[in-house]
Structures are given as C-alpha cells and as structure tokens.
Length: 197
Image 1 (cartoon, rainbow, N blue to C red):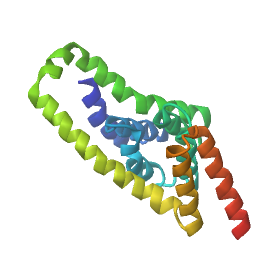
Image 2: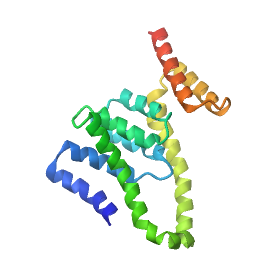
Image 3: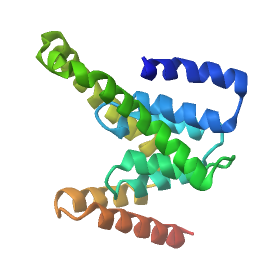
C-alpha cells in the first residue's frame, strides 16, 4: 500500500508543494518503481526526467552513465551521480542522497510487502506466466534504451562507432575488466576529440 501510495501521492503532493527537492525525490521514486530486469530499462525515463527539463546536461548524463557501468550497482551509482550534478539545488551530496534513497525505496517496499506472500506467488502458474511475459518485454525495452539515448547521443561519428566496437571486443573477446574498458573508452574518446579538434 505504501509503495502505491507514494507512487500516486508524490505527484499530487508535488503540485501542492512545488519543491525542487520533492520533484527530485518523486522523479527518482517513479523511476525506481519501474525497474524490472535491470536499471538499463529505465534509462530513457531517467534521460527524459533529468535532461529534458535541464536538470542535467546531455553530456553529463552520458558521461555518468558510462562511468557507472564500471562499478557494481550501476543504477544506484548513476542515480547518486545524477543527484550530485543537478544544475538546480539540491545538488551535491544532498541531491545524491535524495536520488539514491528515492530510487532504492520502491524495491525495498515491494520486497517487504511481498515477502509474506512469496511462497504463494512462486507456486502460482499465472504469476510465473506474467513474469515470463514481462521478461520477454524487457529485452525490447533494453534494445530501445541502447538506441535512445546511448546510440543517438554517444555515436555521432565513425570514430565513436570504432571506439564502441573496440570496447565491446575488449569486454566479450578479451574478457577485460569493465573498469579498464570504461577507462579505455574515455581516453580513446578524449584523444579522438583532440585529434579531430
């Protein structure tokens, strides 16, 4: 009840209060409520939520997303990063804390709320079928998230495609650690940017 109460109540409260801190909390709570199958599925939603109103620049969004992929829990790291780099207050450590708590809270509420019923849900044929269908839909959402904003925002020239393909090869063929792949991509993009001037 609390999960759905906040999901519906926070936007209504925002209309009455109009606080930027509440707007930040509501945006990240809503995003956290829609995560299924990994944080990448809400990437377009986060992009629309923070870039479109000018809270975070496009370049800062893409740079943070790329850097967050090198650490465990990239969605939570990315949310904290976005809260920290907000152009409007609260930003910094307070914005990071608000975004991190807000994006994490829905999962905690759902786990806490469904735990007493988990055995019944696991044995329900209808629930398992719904879960299978949702998992299949997530594949399409992940492809859409790869295209927009990642492909459309980061791949703007042939050199960008070459760097992305080299990073993919390092991950899949060479089994390089993600932190090294992210570092390689950042350095390669910087060198390419300076060379192309």
